[in-house]
Image (cartoon, rainbow, N blue to C red):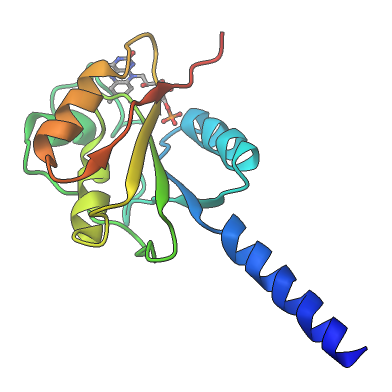
Length: 163
Ligand SMILES: Cc1cc2nc3c(=O)[nH]c(=O)nc-3n(C[C@H](O)[C@H](O)[C@H](O)COP(=O)(O)O)c2cc1C
């Protein structure tokens, strides 16, 4: 009986480990990408991780009509790397979905911060970008990520706008 229980526990923990292998990491400024990430995590039985800025984005920061707003300044500056609140342990995962809102056609610079923070552990893992947007596609963001991080293993991205 004891042997059976030990074996059952081992199988259970192996199953739990197998289910932990996909991570959905996302940044969301106003909740749209967060909802898409939650859906994706549920579908793939993945662990969900929110990439949060040390200094949260205010409505004024997100004002794309204002050239001086924080998002406008960051997106004009390719080397901008806004700091992130907590680091992620990506070691256990082989597949990582990386989600973000489209900003000026590509990913917000905080996604670069997250990727830079996690290099070189991201090497060899399967990376799948996903995004939400007002109307833009994810194509430019995919091209940008591949060009910026050519050694990483990028899979086709997904635009997760509600229809
Ligand atoms: C600074 C900024 C720039 C944006 N640029 C674009 C864009 O180029 N194309 C687009 O379709 N939507 C753009 N949007 C709209 C967002 O991509 C869209 O509202 C997204 O779903 C927001 O996701 P979130 O709620 O997870 O932050 C922009 C929004 C902001 C705040």
